Image (cartoon, rainbow, N blue to C red; front, side):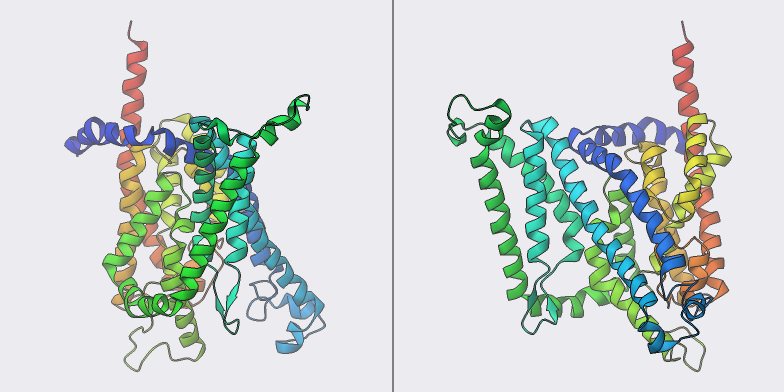
Length: 449
């Protein structure tokens, strides 16, 4: 163990530190820093909406406490769904969906501003052009093909497109600044506040035109090759997604992106939409028809689903517990204690950025090892029939352990999450101890004459 600690301190941490100090990666990290309050507020709204305002949720729904039926005079089924109370709850849920789009707008504008600090250019213009590009793309990708049943849209690509348009806007405008001929000649005597934006009207127009052509090309490709894409997904991606190597690769990509300061689930959500969400819906349909188990009692259905990957999420909560239990850093302990309540509802972003975990080489290895270990343990437990497959859809903000019980319909789902949580605490503990040793060595150098 001592040799492992030495290797982490002398070899791995310096290498990871060089990567984390890259100026472009730092710009992306700072973008998420600045949008963190919005993530927290939206996550809080989702908790309230799912727990209390959702007409089909655990408080209002017929399968929950049934308060919604009580408030509507004892109505159930279709009669309950036809009430204004039910429609109001659904409207609130749709409003939260619009808030997610607004969050992407803020994300792309903020990234554009951060990158202009590196490449140069006008911050406001880069932000507005990035916003325009994302708006054009989201409008085009919300169209429909043929009889209106096949969406052209690419919701899984929205987080990626937000980062793409933010980066392209800043880069293109900075690049065109090199060419004086692209600057519009304005009449002398115009107020400075008006003249400066008008000078850059040609670069702004060319940037938005490029975004328009790009959005048209992507949409047209999707329309033209929809059947081929869908056939490839059905025949190759979905079967492969149910293998352990694919699930491990997916988890590694998600949490590596998070460590880099990117929204891991947003960037990789195309895999969820194409593979794991359909598997989750299929499991739920099987459970609803009481065909989820065969006569031998073995669990059927898909192992890897969207709800399955909520179990590896518990490793961030385990990190918080490991810090509180083993860290000598008072700053880390205070921050962790302050952010523990939102973390219980799976709001990971605040603690990842504020602890900090993002770009922190000390936590890179356990941050990848823990969710991979959780995936293997959960896969084995379900494959051996110890835990049922994840059948029911729950909100992302359902507290850990409770989500395991609700999504599997069994107490064993909660037991599984407790097991992986304890495992994760032991995975993180040695690295928290390494951080203590590094702090002590740094303090010793500072105290030396």
